[in-house]
Length: 145
Ligand code: DQA
Image 1 (cartoon, rainbow, N blue to C red):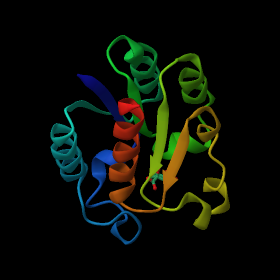
Image 2: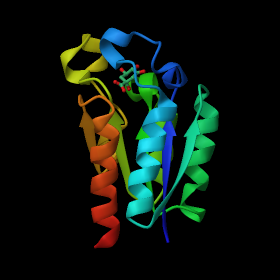
Image 3: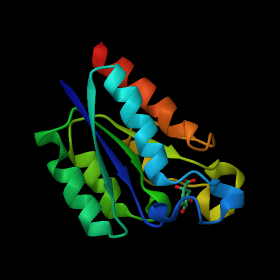
Image 4: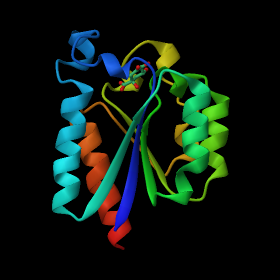
């Protein structure tokens, strides 16, 4: 069975209570439960990892190819400055899809640039929790190919 790793970066553990005007009231747990339900319908297994620590995310990405066929990642603030996470993504040979709840191009100028997106297969940004569902849908279709 295909396995997908879902990685969420810093402060995404606070979804539902954090800047609700931007990120909404849905919690990370709720997002993950919806993803798991969708994955189960498609005979895909998901694993979830959230961390506020750059090095932990780097290590998770490095080891992912041993157990997973694809990664969906919301690097959160690391999107905009973590060369270490960018390099970790570039180092592995499984596809990575970047997601953002908010439209990072429509916010502060420092969020416009993603330094991780160019080493990902693609980026989905601006659809709230639906960004993750769109990414999962794309991932399932890609893995079926
Ligand atoms: C985010 C956008 C980032 O700029 C921000 O630092 C986040 C969340 C998003 O999902 O919209 O923490 O990745």
